[in-house]
Length: 208
Image 1 (cartoon, helix red, strand yellow):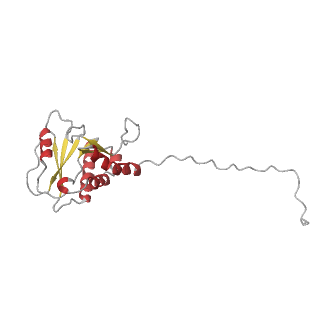
Image 2 (cartoon, helix red, strand yellow):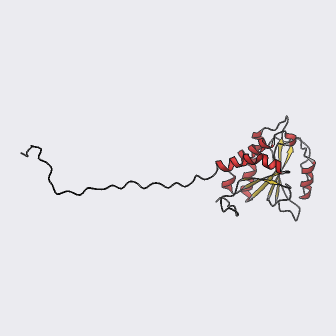
Image 3 (cartoon, one colour):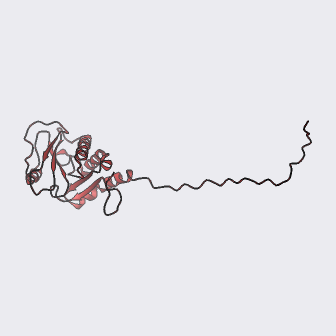
């Protein structure tokens, strides 16, 4: 059964935008991007350290490869970090690469019973995708999220970034909204005419 939104008692949105720290929320799964060469931005490296982990070692990785690590920090809400190789060479990162990574993450979260996944706008920055392009790819990969009871929370740094991608998320919500219930008009009543008691006019024919 799909999760419900406590505020509206309707279906919980599958993809939302959040302004704030990627590593400071209450999602059980945190997705951290890195490049196919193993490089990672300093801010992500610091955040990973707060969870008691280290970035993957430098080396050669396949585009779209995921590395799953259990969180070691005792007070962390997150249970797993998914390192995702989404910064491909040459750039820009293909949107379908982001879509495929998100699809894998949704499957992983559903399998482990995780209700929420925190992730940044994958493929932006060094990947050179725009925020809207990344959001569209994330939405495309979230097709199974509602049925699986998984919510994807895209973390951004500013209100402006959030406002830029909200139309993409609104489109997703509208396309997955249940159809309004329709009331079928009652079928017209069928009336039977009672016999009048009069015989039909004589047509001139006689029975033999």
